[in-house]
Image (cartoon, rainbow, N blue to C red; front, side, top):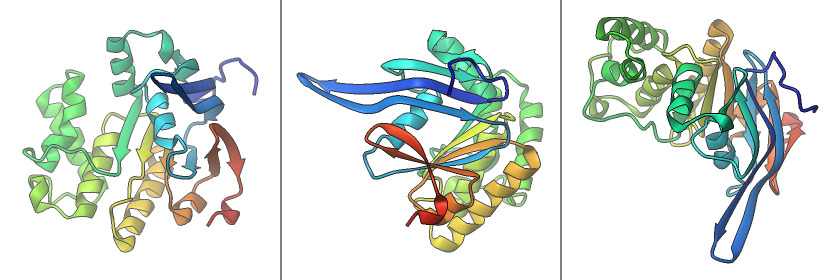
Length: 237
């Protein structure tokens, strides 16, 4: 891949590297990773536990700083931005979904989904309207005023997905989004992500250990020994 910014990419990294050190011990987790994600593209990232998949996702999302390399979100070079500007770009262009939903238990589903909009100073009325719309899209119209303790695991993850999408991001970064769900519930969340990808045109980058989910993506990438390579999802097991 050449070093020029690709206008068609919503998220891109070039020669990305990350090294952790503890005293005299240095561990290179990522080595010169190149990746370009196109609009509405679905990508799975697979690899063994400890291979650096979550580290890569955190770097792509501007949640951590690379040792070397560049990251572009919607053409903006994240590594040149201040912490405050990086936070604003994240809020404007990216959504995040985690294995453990990271929702706030003291708030309702509606309030949780409103939070990203309130952080960018949208009015409470506008935030509620958008949050209601997304919760309806993910099948939770009748659960908007329920707190987390009243929601099932699948409903919580659907709430987390609505929260990730409520800001109209160009890309959602998902780290094992169904890892703590039973297979039936996981399948329903998979199908929901595929539907939203198709309808909304949002790109998805999903870290997963599940070969069935990887096979539903348009591209599957394997992270091994710090290097990211294309893989054939048909050969995943």
